[in-house]
Image (cartoon, rainbow, N blue to C red; front, top):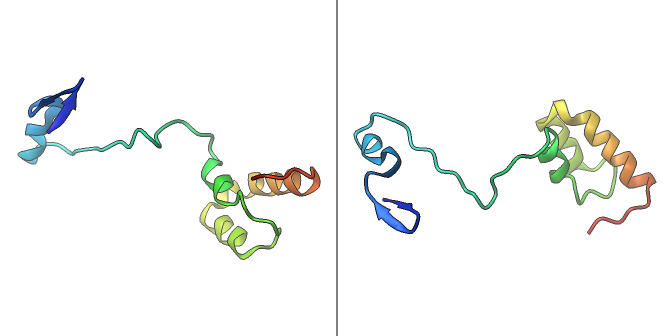
Length: 86
């Protein structure tokens, strides 16, 4: 069932087609949905790292190899800018 403006409607958004296996169903979690810049996931994952060669930092760089430049720049800004992030 799907809620459409506060009412429950069995046919809303093609759920009948999904039940028959004619289409895919996509669920969006609107609480966490939204646009974020390219390196956002990598930067957010290292938000609480306090050492440059931290094991977690190395792991994140291996998972997000395209974000290494951003991670290095972020580390320089945080370590030399005397900014406390809480």
